[in-house]
Image (tube, rainbow, N blue to C red; front, side, top):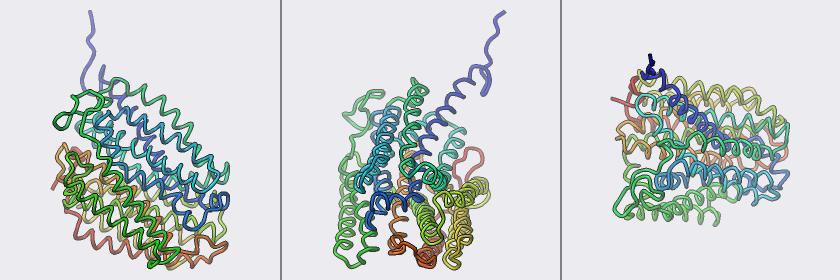
Length: 491
């Protein structure tokens, strides 16, 4: 007698495909974590890099912001490319670019070589991240999608915190170049594993055609035309804004370099808005940003990432330059900050089904203000780490709340775009956080032995920004609860 395989969910023949898609998620999550780690992994190593490559004050922040500006500015274009050529192809291409750029950065011999490598890393990340997320969304329909997206969104805070710890360990034990070259073996392993595991899966195929005259489904090149001009405009505007903020710290707000850069940013963004309104296949429907849930989620992600990355930036310099900590010591003392970020995200994920997103966001930002205020009032290593840990607890809450708020009224066809938009603000927030922190900290960043109080103004500004953001969130974030059944928001 022949025994038929059991086909109920989670049993029999369904187990292998189910295990395989969770394996795909694990591999893609590892790739995404590598991208997020590279936002903050250079924080602790920056003093060593500055000495080795003779980085000036104007070049110093660009080691971080060149990556985040390209990552954030080009991410929407990366999503469009994934729709057109298939997420599997674009994931592999992004991995190849990111891995090669990591090697280039690790071999850098002068400041602009390193900055160019970081920019190329950001370009690879902008291809990889939205394509990998598109694969996750297609692989996990129904209730399992909420679990998969939960894993994905949790990487935002965890990766930023782990980057500082990993940067400290590698810089002290192996040298600063290893914070980049460690990506090479990991990237090569993923380049082998991802194509093998995803071969033949539906998530590997190009999306359906969108628009008249486009190739059919399953055909390479299917999907809307690529808005290259829009991507160039938004990246130019963002890069000019970051340069203007950095220039303000070194040359003053009225300096020609500052005023010119900020003017270029304003013009580029204005032209981008006009161009997107007229484009047949726009990179971004500008009207989407005016919808309250999307505006709320984008705002929360921008301010939360800016506070977290800016705090790591200030804390790393304060502890190393003012208090004499080694890079390894800094990485180790930041472990409580990493734990607090994860705890905040986990707590928010559990309470959002009973407590409104507005309440969670406001409370999280209030905690961030209290933490930054602690670091500003008591410039001592223990108080600095304790303050940043309290801030990270609140910031972790904001990361999860940002996704919940932005997806409040999202139709199925728009959920991926909104998620990509919020992720874009994650990268831009990191760039803005470093730029503003470096502007306010000023000369303390390049001084040989600054006083701990030299960073007080920058921490105080972070506290004020978090407090102002809490007030804005009280008005902007919608009152929404996340349904426990499927993980999506509901009223």
